[in-house]
Length: 255
Image (cartoon, rainbow, N blue to C red):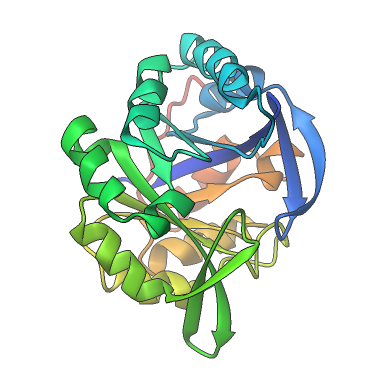
């Protein structure tokens, strides 16, 4: 049985990690490379970095923190945020990232998924979907950091993203993001039941049982941010709790 993955997420703005609630009210949470090393040593299976900076110096800032992070990590990590071309995707991989995440650009130009998969390999391409429930059992895709409604059905978009070549789907519930009230389990099940690639649950983790529930509803990995950033839950404690419930996880006892 494949082990489930625990993935801390670090939203990066101007070279610093930030965190908010429902994509708003961002506050500083630390240095990307330092937090990354801490999470690796605590037992994180992978890391995701989402660069949300809009400054004109963004690319140089990204180059600096991605390189510093890669130098300190021995686990896979994904970088996303504003990746608009195959050339940018390749550049991020060359900086030291293992995977790239596509969101707005993939919705606006779905061919970028296929082009990146052909160049980098399917395993290196993650499509991030920010979804909000508009009516019971129906979720719509948002882009531009959750600020622009597209009217696209989230489940249908997940199927299309897979068909175009993505290797994973990072599925964020905008309704639950930062609330610590638990993942949108119905959304997780709706998407994971319709695609063959791994689904990473995101948005709402507050307790260990939230993550266990996400796995039971079809997620292959669970992403969380604030519970790790602010010490609510340690990764090794979380993994012990999951293992006690029969959920297979990788545990490095020396950590």
